[in-house]
Amino acid sequence: MTTKSLPTPYFMIKEDLLQKDIDLLRTSLEENWGNYVMGYSVKTNALPWLLTHLQKQCFYAEIVSDAEYQLSKHLGFTEQNMIYNGPIKNQEYFNSFLLQGGFLNIDSHDELAWLQALSLLYPEKNFQVGVRVNFDIAAACPEEDLIEEDGGRFGFCYENGALKDAIDLIQSLPNVKVTGLHMHSSSQSRTLHIFAALARTACKVAAQYQLDLSYVDMGGGYYGGRPDKPNYADYFKTICGELKKQFDPSKTLLIVEPGVSLISSATTFVTSVVDVKDIRNHRYVVTDGSRTNLNPMVTRHEYPHHIERKNDNRVTLPSQWITGFTCMEYDRLFECKDEAELLPGDRVIYDTAGGYTMCLNPLFIRYLPSVYVEKTDGEMFMAREQWGIEEFLQKNYY
Ligand SMILES: *Cc1c(COP(=O)(O)O)cnc(C)c1O
Image (cartoon, rainbow, N blue to C red; front, side, top):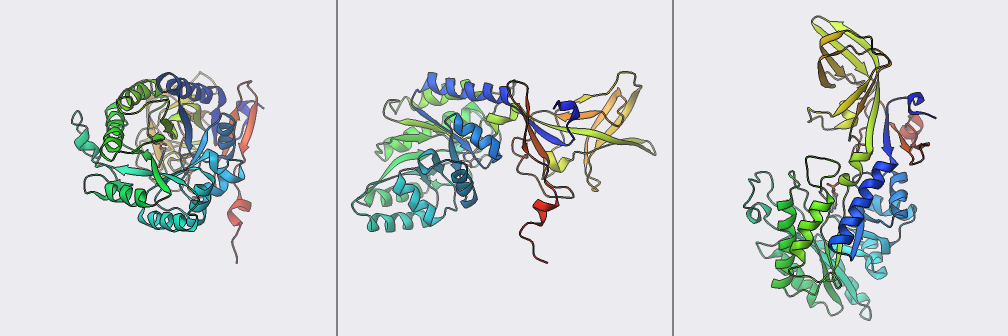
């Protein structure tokens, strides 16, 4: 199978590019801290091939829902190589995690009640938990003008004392200890300043509340595969430089939970031109991909891409609008200005596309596109078949 013969549209993952980012993550953590756990955010892209591929590379599954727990278990992860986060946990899984010693970061009040109940039920056992920290990032980053970063809505608020109350309550249980802080904060800007502030806050909270931490979880939210942006080497130099002021790498584990930064440079979305139409003063190029495949909320106006034409003898046209397969007027991806004419059979390939949207993809008009993996040896592997009506009809009753 060669890429030229694959029916479009499809997402493509290049295994060698994915490996480059995995290796960069590993060496950055190795060189700057040494004692670390690489988690992977299942929410970002739960493609079963990807999860099992990362499991083989010793990643932990970072999960935030019942479905992600069940999927990760199904694919072979155990509680000991999962990290359980998020504001809506399941009490049964919560108990199972803590009894088996998996990493779990508390994010809501019902979990505090479950913890009290578990502590009473198993007085002979010792439990360890992390707590998700919420603080005012904008105030902690005076270097930057962070209009959109208000510290988010997750975790327990540092400024109003809710974090201290949660920690005090946990520490008051005879057989439970706060052994971790969860710092994940998904900022728009993903800057080094933000990660420095997150690391400084972990130090401050640990010192102020006299916590003896066995781990700090810095979460995800990094850039990856963007030459104009920081990469893992930059992030972990900055983060670890701050963490070393309070923590000893031999005693405190550094956990990370990247998602999109790990996979975006390896992923593309490949579409074909199906038709071209002249309508009044516009040339429309109809393709079998859609804005909904790349950006389901259709808020984006830029789609990094390259074009493969079947041949070179083409006239130059002042304007061609690349449009998608849906029957929505808004499904116009970008305008080619003063470029060679596009014709049916040409391919429009979106670069660094699909990190999230391989799975965060609406079942709108067509169902999930297929996913291929180009293996390191050049072989093509179909990781997901295009969804059809069989998948759509399942669990429907009529
Ligand atoms: C979403 C999320 C991540 C991963 O975020 P990316 O931006 O994809 O790196 C990691 N940890 C938690 C808790 C998350 O919610």
